[in-house]
Image 1 (cartoon, rainbow, N blue to C red):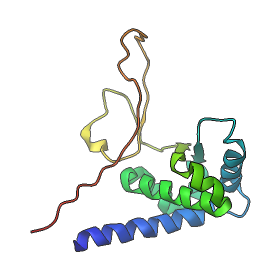
Image 2: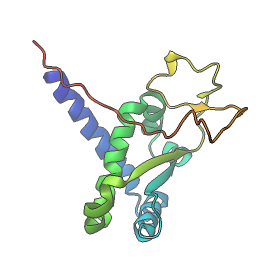
Image 3: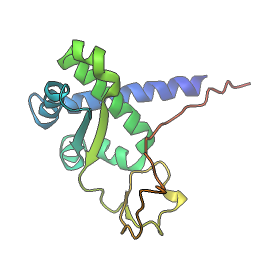
Length: 158
């Protein structure tokens, strides 16, 4: 159970660091979240797109963490975004805060792969898969939708 408590504490620490990055006093992230809150009635998508290059300038260790350990870092970033939106507009966050999503744009450095070079060594890492669509069909779609979910196993130590 101690390992679980350490992991939860690490997530809270990461979340706090991301909230500090998001709270840039009227900068890019604050404007993006405020614009989303104001336009949420007309837009069904509640996705805030954050620029990795801007994140590298403000918090280089968090940008490196996103590329190296995307699973943990994205969970912390999502929680931080919801906390930050609740800080800006508590009533909106109560109504629509659970639908809030994070999108990332910008340079991933050397993490560009093709479908053929995508291997298990990239598990839990942020990568950009580049390829050409050679066949597309509406009759038999291969991918209907994608949604990343990270599930924790509740295993008690004996």
